[in-house]
Length: 100
Image (cartoon, rainbow, N blue to C red; front, side):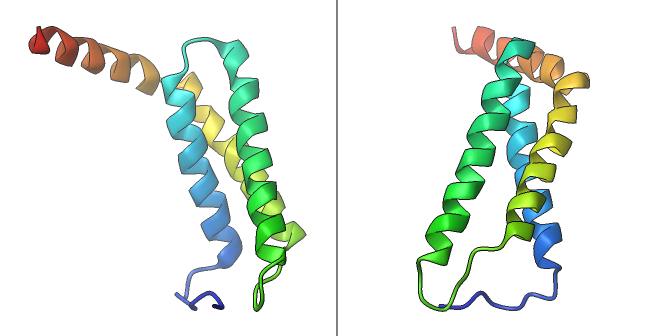
């Protein structure tokens, strides 16, 4: 089934979706060396989705979508370098202590 026209730019949707995914995963990791796994995994995932989409009737794969996905991944990585991951770990620790 063809995608519905929501009035939102398709490439912007790809960029923001992958930025959110990348930001979420980046907030969960403890070591900077694991950022490479986030980048690699999400870019491969985006490529696989585009490839599979190209195999369906009525849909097609686009290099622009793949590029927007990759840019979103790198944009989301910025989250790792903010106080957000540390804040989430503090909240997680406090919640864990309350459960005991």
